[in-house]
Every structure is written in structure tokens, then in C-alpha cells.
Image 1 (cartoon, helix red, strand yellow):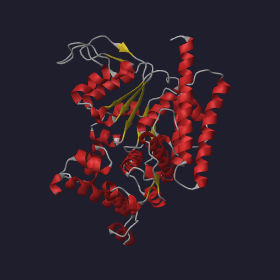
Image 2 (cartoon, helix red, strand yellow):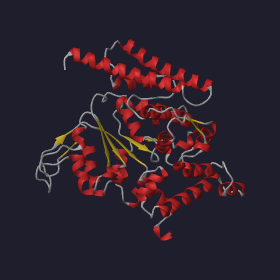
Image 3 (cartoon, one colour):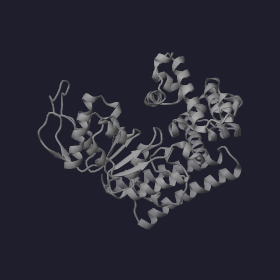
Image 4 (tube, one colour):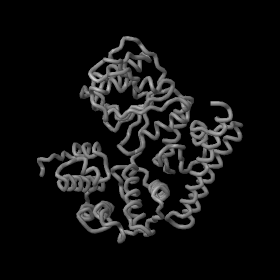
Length: 415
């Protein structure tokens, strides 16, 4: 690519980013909430964009790539903290999220191995991408592998690659994730789900900075920063012998725990507004939420975290009648009324067992867990104990459903 093409690409990236910023501002002006609330959000978006542009002027660079954007984002004042190319899970002004932003900034220019802890749906992959984009490896690949989504027999090939003829079906040489990420970052999601045999080989790569492909004998050296993530209790797994202690210490050099959405409730209105703006734009709609719905959603504890909130807002935008602008509790689409009725019960918005539990002295945490267990059990019974269908009905992933079934001791025998 010659210099002229690089300039054109940089200009195109800059204009694309400007369009996204202007669309966000327009969406905030037309969004829900009071006039002052909308103006405050617009001011914050403008300040954030100005800081990005000013950082380019100070640096005197012509290009506007993802690495520069992430570096500018790390320096700006507290606000929505949107990292270019990342999902809105990194929106928030709560102290819990401010601490996450500070840790991202500190880690971006280090080479330390990072372990991201937290519940499903809290944005672990997005934080990993932010760390990658904010540092010296930003121009190199960011490669992700969901360890739980790959069968045990194929996981080793996914990580290290294989030679032609290494096993049945290996008709050509294939590079693994470590080779693909050379010079950059490898994000290993659900690291707690890898089998012990693979743990041994992963430990060797971390220690020796190299490996052999499956079916090969040539040692390949790589320069890869590993960021891993899990929602599991690795310490308990180490004690139980299902996770190697030496690998645990290799991965847990710098741990970051991401807060669940219920511990950053003040961020929920910001996330709702951002998701509304995004899905309205994608679906060419102009849906707004009434005060009753905004209050209800802001009080809900969101067991599926930001991912569940995102799915909820998208369903509302897509399912409302065409031309309907304002959605209130009374005008919720029929297909979503059961979901919001459960939400209303959990938040104490209507009389029911939840309200009686709280009045009777049961702790909030206990009552919410009982409601969640009952709701999960009801959904499973309704769909014939097909976990994938129950996950769709609840706005969760099948993995979350399986985790909650284990957490609450739910099995088909209860039916």
C-alpha cells in the first residue's frame, strides 16, 4: 500500500468515526429521559470526541487507527468510555467501571498476562480488546478462542495448529491460534473449561514461548500476550484437582474482576440509551421507552448482566408495532409481557410472593435467588427441558442456563 492509499484509508476511517460520533449525538438528543439528562449526555459525547481529535493534533499524526483511538480514550475525562470498535458494555460512569478503566490503562502498555474474572455477560472479551488496542500490540492481531465451544479432540489443533495427515481429516497444514496471534494478543475465553491434558501443553507454551503443531516436530517460537477469562472458581478447581496449580499461577499474574450490572445500577440508564440509539439506527425505528419502563429496567438486577440488557432493548425495538414511538408497560408487545411481568415481580413493582418475602423479613438476595430459581424451573418445564429453548425465552445463553441449573440444584427429576 502506497502513501496515498494510506492517507485515503486514514481519512475514510476518520470520517467513519465522525459519522458514528454524530449519530450518537443525534440519538442522544432524540432519546428518552428529561431534557437536561439528554443535554448532559450530548455534552459528554462532544467532550469525548474533542479529546480524541485534540490528541491527534498534539501527536501530529495523519492516521487515525484503532490504536490511536484507544490511546486517546484512555486519557479522556470520565464519561461513557466508548472504545472504538467495541461494544457498549464499556459504557459507564460508576466507580466500579472507573476502576476497570484505570486498570485497562495501566495494563495496556505492559506485557503482563491478565486473567479476567466475572459473571457471564459482563464484557470480559471487550476489556481484553481494550487492553490490546491501548498498547504496543494494537497493530498486530487480536485473536480470540472460546475454549468451551471447541471439543476436547479439536482444542489442541485450534491452539497449536496441525500438520497435514496429523489425524483423520487433516488434509492440509493449518496454523493454530498461537501462530495467528504472533506479535499480538491471544484471548482465551472460558479458560476453566480446557481439559487437563491440554492444560499441560498450554503451560509449556507460556513457559517456553513456543510449541510444535499437532503431528509435527519443529519447534515454533511465538511472541504472544495471553489474556484469559473465566466465570469459574479456579481456586476451587485447583483444590479439586481439575485445574493445574502451576497453570493457574501462570495465568493469574494480573487479575481483573469485572463488576456485575447489579453492582453498577447507575450505569443502566446510560446503557439503555446507548442500546436504544444503536438498535433504532440499525432497524430504522424511533422507539422510546416510557418513564415506567425506564424505572422498572433501572431497578431490575439483570442476572444476565449487560448481555441480557442488550437483548432486552433489542427485542423491544424489533417487536413493537411499526410507527409506535413511546413504549410503556401497558403497550409492551404481547410476546414480551411475561418477561416484563417477571421483571416487575422481582423489583417489587407489583404484589406477589416477592413482596411478601421482603415484608416477612427474607433478605433481598435470598428472595431474588428464589424468584430466579422458580422462573428458571418454570421456563424449563414450559419448553420440555430443552436448555437452548429456555435460554432463548429467558434472554440467556445455554451456558448460563446450565450454570444456573447447577447453582440451584435443578434437574429434570423435579418435573
